[in-house]
Image 1 (cartoon, protein in one colour):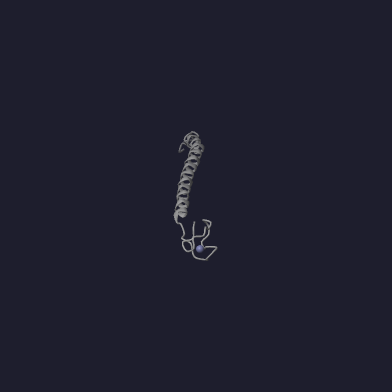
Image 2 (spheres, rainbow, N blue to C red; image 1 turned 90 degrees about the vertical axis):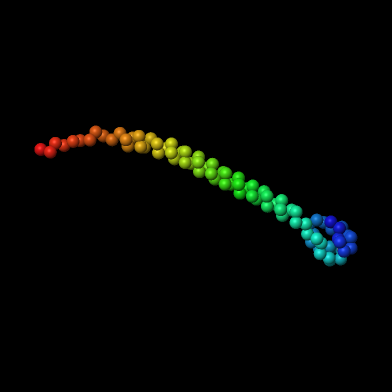
Amino acid sequence: MECPNCGAYNPEDRTQCWKCDDLLPIKKEEPKKANEPGRMGMLTWVVLIVLGAIYLFNQCAGQTLPQPTSMQAPPAPVVRPLI
Ligand SMILES: [Zn+2]
């Protein structure tokens, strides 16, 4: 950008003119663009966590399903006659 005070060219990342030491206007467009990917990153993380939880839940359910079936087949009850 050009210095508004003396008109000298300054790199975009500079905040002060190298020629007259006058403060350069700061552009606030880049921080806004940097925030959007951060939100998208959060959404992708949430989706990944939910998908991972569902995957783990299905795995646990598949492993715990055979256990009730085996428990539903108890040995025949032994009925002892009362004398
Ligand atoms: Zn200047």
